[in-house]
Image 1 (cartoon, rainbow, N blue to C red):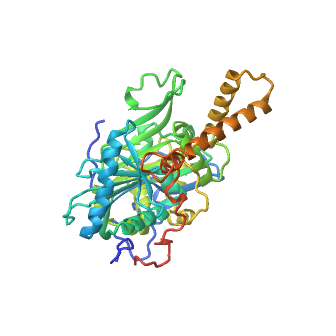
Image 2: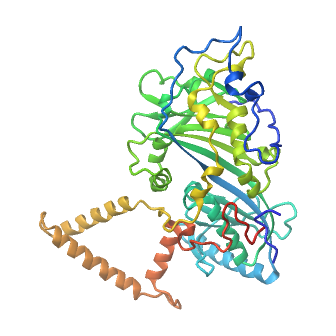
Image 3: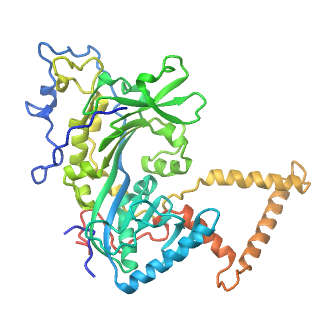
Length: 478
C-alpha cells in the first residue's frame, strides 16, 4: 500500500522511454555502454571511430555533488464527509472573497492548529478554484465531488521547500493538513518532478556544453541561456541565432534541451541564476555547506519530468518516485543524454555510443539520490524566506532618513539609535492596542500573522509532522 494513503526550436518528438523494469534491489539502469565489459571497455574506439583526444579534459577531484528534487507536483484524490466539506469550503469561500476585495489579491486564512496560509483571489485551470500558499508551497482545491478520474487537491512544492526543510518533511505535513481538514486520501499521483544535482566547485564555462556536437542526446537541438555584461537577466535564445556570441558582449550561462518534450534538461550557472532570486541563497548555502554566495562556482544539471514520461517509467506515487530516483537518474544521464569529450562523436558511422564520456559527466552518472535523503530530515530552524541582511539594510536606510529629518548631527549614531527605538516602540504599541470592530485580535497580531504566512517556510511552526515520514521507517501511512 502506498505510504501516502490513510484509511479513517523546433524540437523533434523524442522516442518513448522504456519503463524502469529492473531486478529487485537494482540501484541503477543497465546502460548499453556496460554490456560488453563495462564502460571503459565499451568506449574503446575501433577502426572508423574517432581516435581519443591525446589530452582528455580533467575535472577536479574536490567537486562536491548535491542531488535533490527541485520541484514536486502531486494530485491527491481526497474524500470528505458532508460536514467537513461544508466547513472547509465555507472558509475558502470567505477568504477568497476577502482576497478579491484586497488590492494585493491576498487574504490570511487560519484553519487553526498552526495551519496558517495566504489565500489567493484565483485558483488554477482544471477546475481548481481555490488557492492557498505558504512560502513556495501551494495548495489548490477543487469543489468537485467526483474524484474517480481527477484529483480534487493539488499541491506544488517549490525549490526552497524541497531543499530546506526537505520534500520528505513537507509532503508529510501536507498529508497531515489534509487529514486535519477531515480529508481521507484515497490515492495520489505524481504530476511532475524536477530532479537536479548541484556540482559545487566547477564553472559551466569550463565545460563544452554549448556545442551540440559534444552531446549524445535524444533531442536534436539545444538552446542556450546567456548572460549579458549588464547582468539584466537570463534570456533563452537559439544558440544558432546568437549573433553576439563572438563579440564578447554575452556569455553562455547554460543550455536547454527538449524544452517542449516530456523530458526537458537544463544545465546552467546556479550562482548567476541565484542572483536573480536572493531569497533562495540562504537555503542553498545551507544545503551546500558554504558561507558566501559570491566567489562560488556551481553548475546545476536539472531534468524536468512530466506526467507523460513518468507513466512510461511506471512512476505513479511519491513512494515510487523515492524508491526509483537513482534508476531514473541513471537512465537520464546514461541513455537519454551524455556529454562527451570534444571531437569524439562520429555521427556519420553512427558510433555515438563509443564516444568517450567527459570526466564531469562520468561523475554526474554516479550520483545517488538515496544517499542524500537524510538531508531532508527534521531541522530545528529552517532558513526564513526573507533575506535578513537586505531587510536590515532597509531598516538602517529608513533610520538614517528619519534621523536626518529630525535634525540629528551627522556623527550622532547613538542619538539615531535612541530615536528609532522610541518611534518603533511607539507605533508597535499603537498597533497592539488597535482592534477592528468586532475583532478579538489586534492589528499587530493580524499583521504578524500575514508576514508569517508570506515569509516563513511551512515547517517553521510545525517542525515534527504527525506522519513522521522518515526514510526506512514504517509509519502510520503504511
